[in-house]
Amino acid sequence: MVLNGIDRLKKENFGLKETRLGLITSPTGVCRDLSSSIDMLYESYMLKALYSPEHGVRGDIAAGGRVDTYIDRRTGLPVYSLYGGENRPQEGMLDDIDALLIDVQDIGSRYYTYISTMRNCMEACARAGKTFVVLDRPNPVGGVAVEGNRLDTAFASFVGIAPIPQRYGLTIGELALLFNREYRIGCDLKVIPMEGWKRSLYYDQTDLLWINPSPNIPGMDAALLYSGTCLFEGTSLSEGRGTTKPFEMIGAPWIDAEKLAEKLNLKKLPGVIFRPVYFRPSASKHKGELCAGVQAHIVSRRELDSVAVGLAMLSVMREMSGGQFQWLPPNKEKGNYFIDLLAGTDILRKSMDVDGYLKKCKSDSEEFKKIRKAYFLYE
Image 1 (cartoon, rainbow, N blue to C red):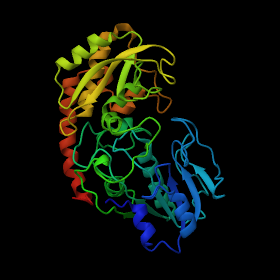
Image 2 (image 1 turned 120 degrees about the horizontal axis):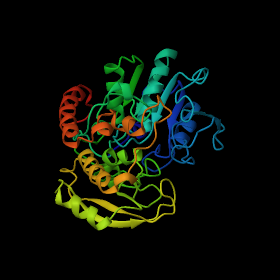
Image 3 (image 1 turned 135 degrees about the horizontal axis):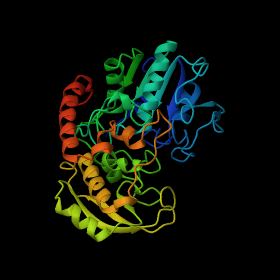
Image 4 (image 1 turned 30 degrees about the horizontal axis):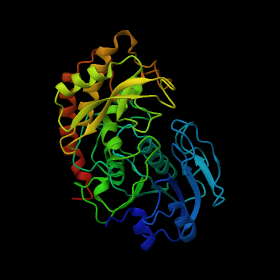
């Protein structure tokens, strides 16, 4: 049995009973019985305000969609936007609370905007003299493996908020502890840890029920592959948005699916095999067009290196695409290409030296493994 931070708060108050609270949450913010964290805190604590990350507190906003400040119909509480504008609390938003809680399901990947929201809110709480409380939850892809390069801060953005690898192997509570000390945020930070979780556990090895962390992460395989295949968001190739297998199926109208699968399987990448597929996205890139590509099937989670898989796929598909392959135009944020913000560097785009990039990933991952140990809350 795994008890999340919210379940422990339901049983004991951790000194928060007489504290005016604000809550950052999403549809994953639920107790073990799937009752809403919002409702529990509203009924049992002094919950005064809600704060919405990407997708909204009730999950009614599409990926990338702007979140506006509004009134929650169920509780009548104000819901302040943390996404689509400044992406952080603005003046007056924290005035009516003493402590800001976060209860969202992370997926353990640097690109995920929930951890960027968390860091921005920690900084805001430090400036405003408010306590920041993390209600901890499992890292769905486990707390052992680390993959990828550490982000170059010249390419820091909302999809890469700190110099951590793509897959960092920490819970959101452990990551908050690392952010607070390593990046000198200095907020009054409290983590309410889980009971029963171990680093070796994947989410589906616990007794917790799966709720999609966001609309395009429908299951464990998508979560495991995301740290690698999310790189396709920076290209003209479809990352599978608008299909039933986002981040598992990758393709484009001009790809030869069978040839692509053959080329990738010849690489004998550990933990994964590829199958030719055809799909017609209902949204996002190539909407309504017939795309050909591959689905990555995980055959060994322990052997999988998702970043290496994503890079291998990117290299082969770029070569097969010829002039039809494009990096998406520079992003409005600092004028950087989106692939550079995702990769945390411009080396990949400028050289496509996959072997050299993977050597850096290995070196950076080993370095980060040593740093993160100081913040472990679980064995």
